Length: 337
Ligand code: PEP
Ligand code: MN
Image (cartoon, rainbow, N blue to C red; front, side):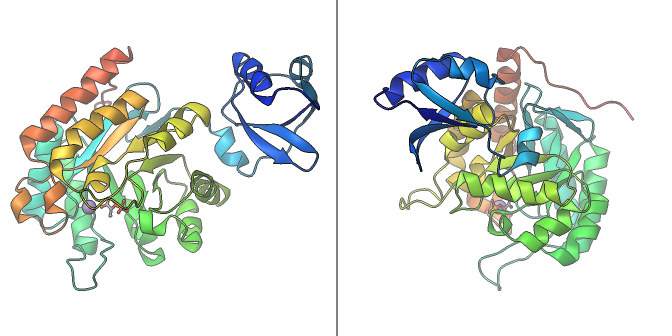
């Protein structure tokens, strides 16, 4: 929705009056002067009411660039028997990579003990170097499913390429789309066509609008619910890996009404910052955390420096429960099968 402002009216004052009606707006210079564009997560207010605000010249309803995303706003989803986006945050945790059957079983045990709802782990890994460990592939997927089932956990794992979509969709509850693939449109279409829920990581150099449109690609292809995951964007500071953009989390959550999970592990790149960043993410309203943890971080084959030890993961599990209580929404338990 586009609201044009009367000549001579003070834009800031009009913006405040609209905000009092529940309309979040951004100032844009349109073809016919200054105007305000209404964020899709705003309250539904009729054009008549808006026109009655002093300083408003006209209201026009323009089609949104991402109608599918807008239509899914403020809708909790149920994945693997757990409610996500319903108020209580949840924890998704596990190793960066699925390395062996024993490692993923030990991880599942540790993750369940910390109160997590989902086991994470990459069987197909995107690695910056082609010579680095690239995961255990198909075999790793089935170890992961068995390990998660043994502990009542859902499975979230990355789909790296179009060739893996069918196999991963058959095994996982939630399909992860990695930061490096956020704008791989052929992959988004193929994943969307499965109808499965997805966790869409933000590209490390992507705008929020590009992220929303990537989600729209999934939905336009027939995809299931999309969970947005902020994992840090590239900055210039070398003391940590990426800049955790909590402003984007607040924008997607509170203005666009989307379900947002925060991955502090790939943002920080170091385990000593994961606890504080997790608490910040919960405070800003995140619907969940996706964190890396390993039964033996020193032996991890990828991302060891950011992998949490069991006791550190348990502390984060406690923070998630405390936040659920603070929000007045006890964590949903997985229905007994
Ligand atoms: C991961 O979660 O293991 C991963 C590779 O993350 P990202 O795509 O955010 O780098
Ligand atoms: Mn990793």
